[in-house]
Amino acid sequence: MRFNSTVLIAAFLTVIVAFFTAEAKAQHLPDDFYFPTGEITGNVFQSEEVTFWLETVVDGLSDAWALAFLPDGRVLITEKGGSLRIVENGQLSPQVIGGTPTVFNRNQGGLLDVALHPDFINNQLVYLAYSYSQAGTSNTAIGRGRLDGYMLHDFEEIFRGHPNTARPFHFGSRIVFDADGFLYFAIGDRGVMENAQLVTNHAGKSMRIYDDGRVPRDNPFVNVDGGMPEIFTLGNRNIQGMVVHPVTGEVWSHEHGARGGDEINILRRGRNYGWPVITHGVDYDGSPISQDTAAVGMEQPLHHWTPSIAPSGMAIVHNSARYPGWNGNVFSGALAGRHLNRIVVDLENERAVHQERLVPGLARIRDVRFAPDGFLYIIDESNGRVLRLVPIQR
Image 1: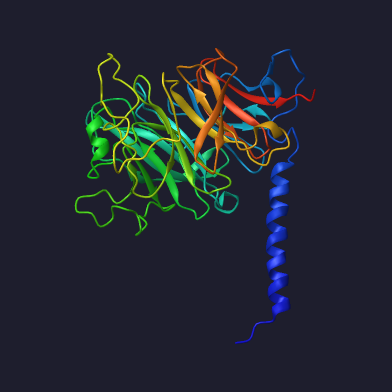
Image 2: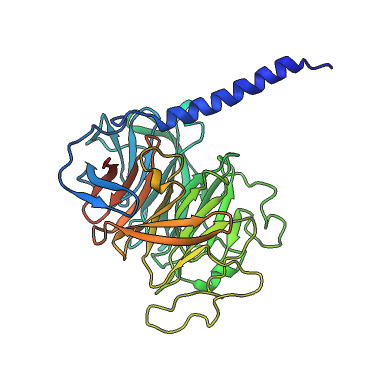
């Protein structure tokens, strides 16, 4: 079979033009695509690189945990108690989305993350991470349903963690899809730290599955006797931030330490991130967990926070005209630290070189999103609000 080189070149150029056109559209959505533009109210902050004001775009929330921005201008918000809320025309609807699973809302458990299928525009699939209970025990699950109006239709559970435990904390969990359509999420060690080093359970691990729950055959522990086939990495204490890096395509995460030792890691197939064999933190009563901060065969974090900031939510600013001084920076919410953390990264050497604490003392910040409209949004858990960072030209 002979190929016409002119046709091939034309097809290639068409793909390239389409790609960059899509990128351009994503970076030039109207300021009011998700929320109407407000007037500056005096809540202005001067960071090292950007002057901005914090605009409240949603309030009246209860234990809000995560955000997902729909391509038609609507926004989904999870509340830990079990409600999936929706913003339409910039307003929080009083109508709660039906068809969601019953969740185990206790301590750190509840309705957690929300994410859209990569082909959401065609299939309308919404994914939820949540905790469930069974006979006095609990664990983390992943499920999905088709959004239509105020209902998730045909909701199905595609993953359940193993084993359950009566301990009500360290559930994880964030959900991301990579460019190949693989779904990643994580479960914390569930309070049994030794489990994070055992591939015979899901605790203290990140997972990688297909969008319908099937297991990729090249997952690292598929052929290990007794191994959980969904496991992608191990030795992760409690991941509550996860994002696909816009340049490298790899999955980045951060996880809670105990007293100190919060970490940023790049999740790579089969790698061991050390918990609890190596750590920069100590236990909550001050007693040592390990004398070691490094060991052969275990990964070093890209960055660690000691003392702990209790990181939650993660975003990377990329190709931004709104925040040019922040391009390439990693942003994390801080629950204990009550601020938004900005980290400057040397990507080539995979290390943090600088950090800045924005809006110190503001609130427990639960989620951080770099949205399709090019704005950074945060969930103020303390006051039941969603805020966006609006840059001010000086």
